[in-house]
Image (cartoon, rainbow, N blue to C red; front, top):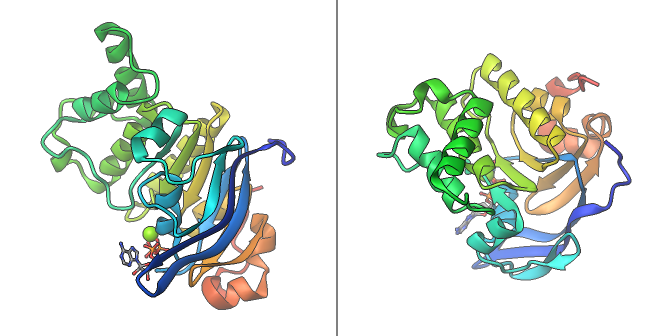
Length: 253
Ligand SMILES: Nc1ncnc2c1ncn2[C@@H]1O[C@H](COP(=O)(O)OP(=O)(O)OP(=O)(O)O)[C@@H](O)[C@H]1O
Ligand SMILES: [Mg+2]
């Protein structure tokens, strides 16, 4: 991808207080169109809170969010989805009693470009299930899926809405190495299809291999931003988050 592409997302001075706690404080960054942009940092650093604000689930205390130059600060989640901004949840949230197929169907119906007829809706659901590799469990209730497939369903439901900006929150938490590799490959293919990805993950090998650029949050504030190689050798990041053992993790470049 081209690193000088115009930003799809611009965040300026974003701040969120919960009572007296600044969960996110004065954070600014830009995500180029077509990037896989990583967001890392210790537990409680404010990553999910930042996602919630971008996806419209939380109203910022201060600051602005621009999507393709348009001010989208304080939009509701359904409005964000209509513009092409959608998130996955750290704790997956399928409709548990609905089947895999039905879960994706709901997302297709409430997505950006609702299908014009039942046949088109079916084709879109089938396409998403095939893409994430869940076609064989299409008739299974979401509640009984193992965690790896629940995460794929969460990703499939987000994709079914037709996003231009996909926010993935710890989609690899609890997955095996092979499952994680599979998700990395899916993220690369999603980006190749024209969707920009903002990606929260604690699995540093995954993050370093798939991201073009990474921002580090610590105690709600931006600690660093740069390429995977720059982040891995940044002393402040090593001190606050990566630790010595993580130094030298391959970038896969
Ligand atoms: N709804 C809320 N009400 C009060 N405090 C909250 C709320 N949501 C988050 N927090 C607090 O805000 C801070 C940031 O939380 P957040 O969930 O954004 O962190 P995170 O970086 O996503 O962490 P993790 O890696 O564990 O998922 C934490 O101190 C958390 O306890
Ligand atoms: Mg989180």
